[in-house]
Amino acid sequence: MKILVAVKRVIDYNVQVRVKEDNTGVVTENVKMSTNPPDDNAIEEAVKIKESGKATEVVAVSVGEEKAQETVRKALAVGADRGILIKADGILEPLAVSKLLQKIVEKEKPDLVFMGKQAIDDDCNQTGQMLSALLNWPQATFASKIEIKDKKLEVTREIDEGLETIEINIPAIVTCDLRLNEPRYASLPNIMKAKKKPIEQINASDLGVDTSPRIEQIKVEEPPKRKAGIKVKSVAELVQKLKNEAKVI
Amino acid sequence: MSVLLVAEHNNKELKPFTLNAVTAASQMDTDLHAVIIGSNCGDAAKKLSELPLVKKVIQVEAAHYENFVAENFAPVIVKLAENYSHVVCSANTFGKNLMPRIAASLDTSQVSDIIKVISADTFLRPIYAGNAFATVKSKDPKKCITIRPTSFDPCESSGGSAPIEKAEPSEEFNNTKFVKREEIKSDRPELGTARVVVSGGRGMQSGDNFKLITSVADKLNAAIGASRAAVDAGYISNDHQVGQTGKVVVPDLYIAIGISGAIQHLAGMKESKVIVAINKDGEAPIFSVADYGLEADLFEAVPQFIEELNKLNTIQK
Image 1 (tube, rainbow over the protein chains, first blue to last red):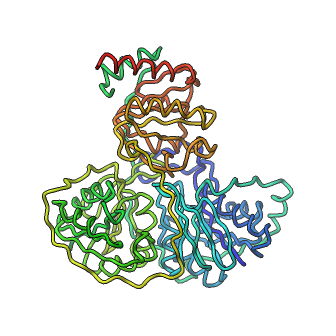
Image 2: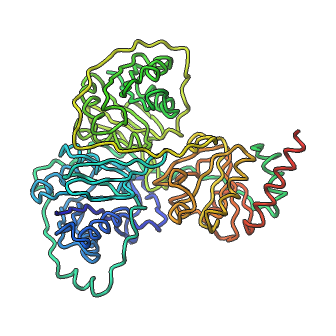
Image 3: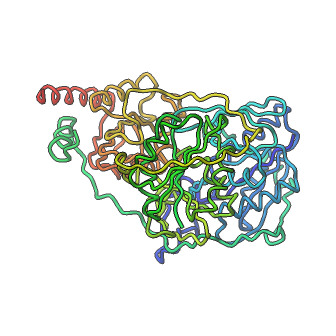
């Protein structure tokens, strides 16, 4: 079984994001970049499945600028066997990314495609579902548990009401929740080894996919600021304020 | 052209956020139709027809729609979408799972999780966990939009009498089978719509200590929330998680207890009207959004808080 894992390079989750003064986007210069957190869970799960003997190859793929190679390299350092970078500049909407991934799926013919449930930059939560639609494959979104049963997967999904379990036939798409597993850190020897693993580079324009944006970003602004609050000295003061000033209890 | 709203329901009743989605959809175009897909969902369809903003209900029934599997829902909606300019539903786990599957089939670039309708094609949406707001204009001929339910008021729920039309179901998608759903039942208000939310974080130190949160929630008739750290640590189940990848809540009063206030948590609660933080670390980021901050050991402060609330209740009685 072969597993393709899609990973995205995003601003690190610990960075306090700042809006550009000209309102065209957010500041990305000299900002720490990392793998989108739930994509780390996706890689971890694929590598664990391979370690259990149920998969033979894990291929990491990313779509983006040249530097997204670092994100693919990191996936290789935690256990992916080889990488693919689809080079594309500018804003890439999930629809364009899923069309590019579709081309890679057609070429690589994986049994499973994993990715994070949501990217923490655009917060769209679309790519996995869109890729499933384009391939007409089953989709298991927001997965917090995956069990492989022969040619099927049993997946526990985190939903607003609690948990849902579905059974999907392979080939399938799974989008991973942060609670699926605990992603490992890359060890130094593995980081060194990853440098020798191959990363194939493909230009998005060579895949015959129109990636031009369909959504015009008119402006990006700071959200309205909350006015500064106060510190209270005691529980009694807190309760009085809530009752008499805020009038919420 | 008109708007098609995808109703969320449990085959008997409409889910509350359907009403918020109707409000949002009606701001895109007042010629608003709603589709309800399910199994034996006649009662819910009737309730949908009573929403005054809904001009027509389309009911699609088949056994394989009983459990809301996106792979079964999407083809029906894609077919109906021929007659509409917009397809709309809530950006909760129902809509997040379903809408991109519809959008990709329509070759539309979806606009997710909008918080404001500026015009029929222009919307405001938070990005980067709400640290920036983007104004975006969809250039696709058909628009697929998910809306953040807590950013729109629920619509009127009675007085309307829209006609209910039946539409043909699509074939079952055989590669996905629903197995089970474990819903956590509670007598408390729902987290997404509660007037008061009391949340605990990693500072609670154990699942057992969450009974302090429960006691406060009991006093205030509140829903119980949690940070991702508390859910990951196993103190409480995932359906309580508030944040960027959990639920977004906008209560009148949000009480954060033992929550440091990571960016990802703030994304889910910072629009609350009044925020209270109780934390022993005076530098915790939660204090930057709190209207009332109390720097104290929660294990001393929370029992006192319960006691003070008891006194209030006595006075009120």
